[in-house]
Amino acid sequence: MSKYVGTTSRGIRLPIIKEGDNLANIVVDSVLTASQNEPFAINDRDVIAITESVVARSQGNYATVDDIAKDVHDKFNGGEIGVIFPILSRNRFAILLKGMARGVDKIYLMLSYPSDEVGNALLTYDELDEKGINPYSDVLSLERYRELFGRKVHEFTGVDYIDYYVDLIKKENCDVEVIFANQAKTILNYTDKVLNCDIHTRNRTKRILKEKGAKIVLGMDDILNAPVNGSGYNSKYGLLGSNKSTEERVKLFPRDAQGLVEDIQAQMLKKTGKHVEVMVYGDGAFKDPQGKIWELADPVVSPFFTSGLVGTPNELKLKFLADNDFKDLKGEELREAIRQKIKEKQGSLVGNMASQGTTPRQLTDLIGSLCDLTSGSGDKGTPVVLVQGYFTNYSQD
View 1 (tube, helix red, strand yellow):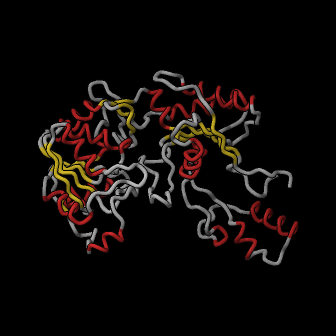
View 2 (cartoon, one colour; view 1 turned 60 degrees about the horizontal axis):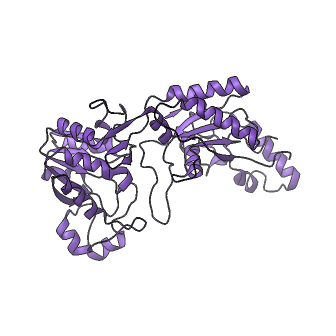
């Protein structure tokens, strides 16, 4: 065996990206400079992945709390609204709630329990069992919730999100009533104008509310899906995927970046002769076993990618082959038998027992998760990740 390294993931450092920067040129130059200085070679089917944050920043895709407030006010005609199923996040949601509260007179804030959609917990199921509460049917007022469970802070942030959200709404001169429920239709007992803030279940929530007679039903993808007073926007995702920038401004999920990934691909081909794949990535799709938090608070892992990243892995499970098809072989004979089996695979392996246990996910979700873990979200300074060897396998030297 002449090749001893499989997949590698390298964080690539960039200059600090500002609005108006030519991101394609900066990414290409940074990857090539890194390859010359480290050094390492650029290969066909390497993947260059750019975090959504620097893409949106270079686009200047920002909006203010006042922009959010105006859009919410105009689309709901002010008054009272239900804000349901938000995630518990200072970075992701609190500033959006600030804009919602600024745009209306009263919010019925309906929180899912014992945790939000991505796993941030208010309570544990054991605590619900102890108090005899059925989360699938029981509706709790704030007073009843406090009577049963008192005040609790988030394990990692130290924040009581209930008090945090209530105080934030009140500071915008907006009344608030908190409800704990997991059935979307519950909010219609309080108001028929609803802004549902769930991410991955938003379409089902909208459908249920409309079927139950809601007068106005919008999701976060319907807010700032067009410019407000010249603001940034995202026509597909609206506020979904946004992050706090300042106390009065949010960075929205990037838009119209298909040209960016294809430009980078073309520049790399011209400068290196290698055909690389390129993608924009945000949150990875994985779950923290300690905090029970599912990382994916963005609407998708990758909103933009080149055509070579379409699809799912089509792989054989080596340990299945070793334990079954070739259980009587050892050493070089076993290695060669498995290598030959891989070389002979044709077409889709869906349903093939020899592929069971391989990860049945989109390539962009898998690679994007690897990149998110590599780049992190703090001070590593590597918003570009170069993934090499992802499409190689055991049969290749």
